[in-house]
Image (cartoon, rainbow, N blue to C red; front, top):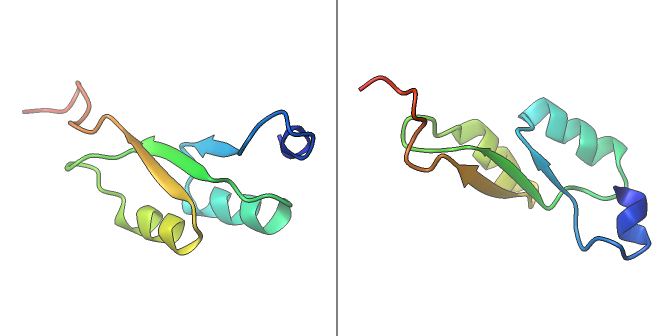
Length: 74
């Protein structure tokens, strides 16, 4: 993906469902940090530590299932 960005074929690189450990590894070992991390995020799953890590490292958090998962017990 980094090569594609360097060649101008993609604007930015994003990841999906990466945890803090995985993000640290990509940031430390890669040349280009991810711009966004898409994760499940809603009132029943707020993932405070992951969101703080992303914000501290300039990674935008994109949430999916903003109203919760369909399998959530009521």
